[in-house]
Amino acid sequence: MPMMIELTERQTKSLSILAEHEHCSLNELVREAVNDYLNRHPLQQDSDSAFGLWRHKREDGLAYQERLRSEWCDESTV
Image (cartoon, rainbow, N blue to C red; front, side, top):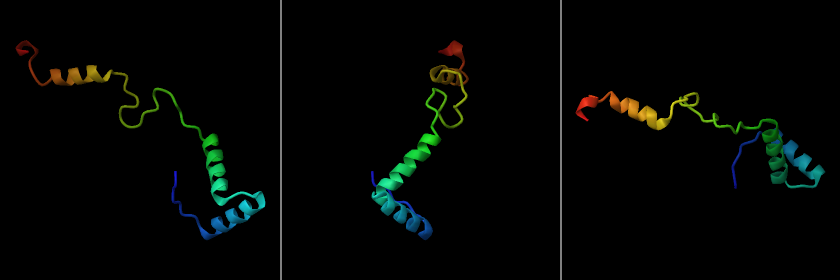
């Protein structure tokens, strides 16, 4: 997928020289660098990897919804 990134002049020049020495394109060199970074910083892929306020909640979503709605009306009138 195409993506635009902004590099400093020094970074661009250094990467271009390295790509020439490695006999590869600048795109290929950047892709390899991104893969190396991602391999060193893996994402957690467990069930608790959600973001936001609900990350540590153990209550089922439907149970939470029903508990909140029960506060809105008297159960004897339902």
